[in-house]
Amino acid sequence: MGSAPIVVHQPSRTGGRRVTVHRHGRDEILGLAHSDHDLILFLEAVGVLDPDAVLDDPHWVEWRGGRAHQFDAA
Image (cartoon, rainbow, N blue to C red):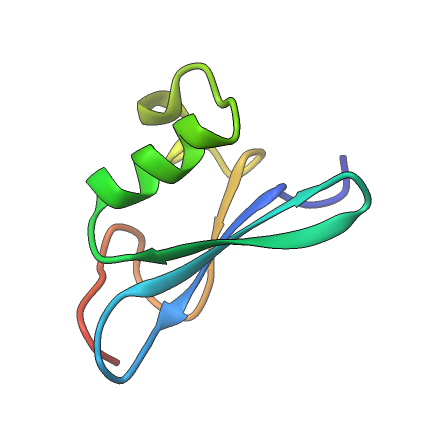
């Protein structure tokens, strides 16, 4: 795999981070996460079996435009 299938994008000006997953040959928006808990719920919904374990695995999740696990406004 060339890049992580899950991308947590930079924090928005109002807080939260858009989360996308690459599957079926395209990127799909999962939602706006305001915490790791939100992110875990999104990952469970798309079938990730142990979402807690993949949050810091760069093969699974790419954190863009900010520190990992930080959801505050940019």
